[in-house]
Image (cartoon, rainbow, N blue to C red):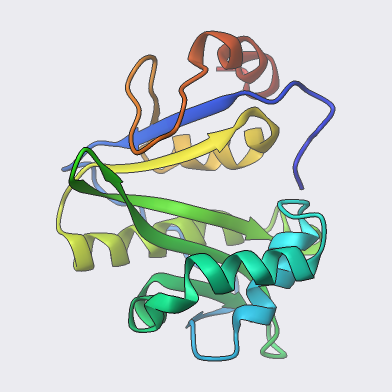
Length: 190
């Protein structure tokens, strides 16, 4: 869940090339599953459940416009966690952004349904995504844009080798480091 009780500021993170990928395993009863046609509804439900979108319909419309035109890429870049009943409970997208004509690997839309949080699913999901990005895009810097509202996710990103950038950015994202860091220090004890 996003914590909208704190101010919103943009946060840019980078995982430098060559950083070893930790091995956080899924707890028993959970499994990974890659996107297949029709799973956009599950993606939208997960993202809406953590308040990334106002509702599932908004999330679904976003997905259809931004990602569905890249169906072959989706099948190897959108990852889910399924519970023992085969229901999707978390997702992450290993994608890219263009920065001055250069394609930067990046993480988009990481979420785990609230009732499944604090079980280690997020760390395992991020690490599996990093492995896939490394396989598809090589050992390159990996970026992500997030916000202060997602400080719990930032804590996971820090554990798997991402660094908060003071000045650097990628694509069209603003970097609000000076405004964000006091809140992150308080929330994450960094």
